[in-house]
Length: 526
Image (cartoon, rainbow, N blue to C red):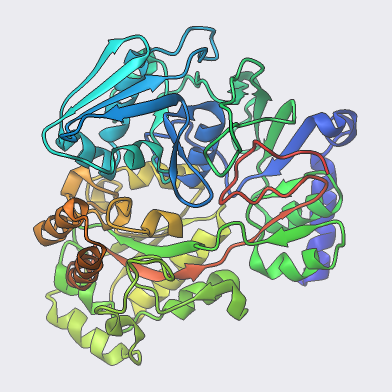
């Protein structure tokens, strides 16, 4: 369909979505936001999905936060004391913290929350493996007694990467980590308005009048989380043209992830501002299921590398614009200390489709179907799926392309069974560069089987290198170990890097929302 006709139809659709109550009567009391996708899952510990992480940080708070300089700062805690031997950490909660149901935040709520989060998070697993005892001696005190020093303790509790270590009441935190928490009771700056949630269309939050901001200056996920809107409404608009039309018409205030093909049109509107919220961008990753055929075969995983062209994936999402993406990306975020060229020639050398076909045949591949999941309502991820399916077919792999909505995709990704039982083989997604800074937070590079990330890779060598990195204090040795991890990753192929996307966000009528990702405190009417 021609773009002009598509926009005309989208404008009509966006107008139909609005109403006097939505667009006018609420005035500046309401911040209207278009998220990257529907909020299919509410529990920010159960899923690493960024849309759920962003929701979680509105409703729940964290013991520590990260400031704009990537430094960890106290958040729910007043501070902590570490004994000289490094084996005992005592954390003290701030006074006056309350859950949304009015109950006091207690230390035992927090210890239960930490345990549940740690069961789902790679760095959390490392923390608990180093912990001899986690206790709550009184209502405001948490105590870690460690088996060995763990200098990354506050980093683990305050990192903004998914899943975030959010605090919830003990009765919710005692939910099995493999089961979703459905009741959204936190202590964060917003209350979740459950009765107004409309799956696939709307999510509503109300300002928490009882929230106690900590003193200081707000910076990223640290500092006072001051809210200047009484209400935040997420309006799910899967069609990019509909979202663009709604933003241009002033029916929404902020579009989290505008599609690259519509950026030139948005740029022509003087009322709309567009910028890159996070210079580390998003790293494309092709997750392969290591549990079942065909990609439980490491030789087959490696056979894809000579034919894979990162530019194909990035152009499918961002077009030809050179400022929208980068290729030549390895297993650590470009431009950050741990990034290197170690082993990277397998992706940067001239592409060789015939070599890939030969290696597929030599791997012992027997024609098993590879199920490629394609989220039909998530355009960027669908683009990755389309290129993946084409690549697999070209190298001689049988493809079963399955288009699903985002919520169904997340449900499928959690399944560990074979494709004959509703499992999956390959899935393309994006992770923030912030989540690939180093081996400590790089969940996609975990290779500890069923305890690890979806795809469930297993590599004793990768895990040994990670453990060495986390125990090492010398930066030069850390750089060496990170380079060695990258070389090993090109052997084991826990996933395949697809390039770096420099995504934009667009807004109008509000002060700049640029805080790394979609955070809803500190934003005022312009």
